[in-house]
Image 1 (cartoon, rainbow, N blue to C red):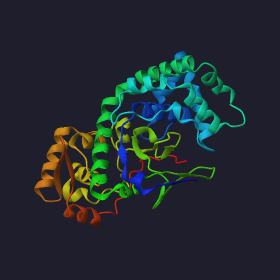
Image 2 (cartoon, one colour; image 1 turned 30 degrees about the vertical axis):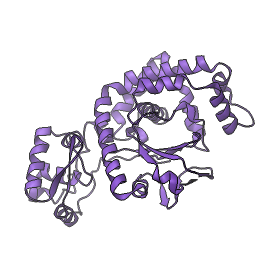
Image 3 (cartoon, one colour; image 1 turned 30 degrees about the horizontal axis):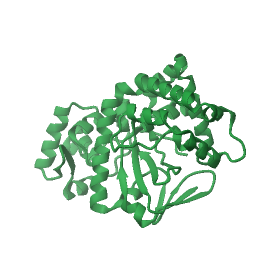
Length: 347
């Protein structure tokens, strides 16, 4: 277990950012960990990504991330392999350029911290000729991105933008403690300590740093942290919207039908239940595998009946439950979860 003591000054400086490079590393490590048989909703995507990794020799340098993932089970690893995003909505090209220009002194510092006795053989090229090693690694990450992530990135980016808006609203209205308590995974928030599951016990104390939350579609229900940065602690967590990789939600079980359906209809029941988390029309359409026009029609009916409401945040319009909608769902909670619902491993 790693226990992170968050001082008030760090909590007060909580921010949220999107990182395409962190998504790329997360997606890569998911495939390296699970092969072509990843759990829902990554199954179809992972099969194609696995085939890409096997077929393209240019991706061979990415094997270093499989080793880092193995070593992460027992303790922290150097953060420069997945650098902290320098902007709230960074572009992949910017992040890869930041990776390429990682200073040799920073690499040496992190290697000394994590491997004080002896540097593992696979990491020595990054010490002995860091410019060539980092260029090779960045090129391989770019190729993996183009083949595996770029085709689905527009949908991923929309889901991540929505995640940022929702978390920012919660941050402003309820404070950072509420956001941290809702990160999910197997985290435990007992103010002021955030505990993350690890086989090795360790502690980290922040002192007037920044806390950067990075939502990831490819977190696979894991919450992780990066502690090497002297002025910043990054915490990555599972974002909403991963179902977009499967083309929609899992099919409901015929054995235990939703008792809400006879009352309001199949599509309206699905939209109503999906509003347990505020969402836009496009996100609901992707999550439920319905046409946006169909979702808009159902939302209009739910708003008109007083069980849902519209709220605007910037240029986006969110829909969320009214108290009457929450009561209605509470009355029909006997419905069983879908039989093909995601089963996602946690560390």
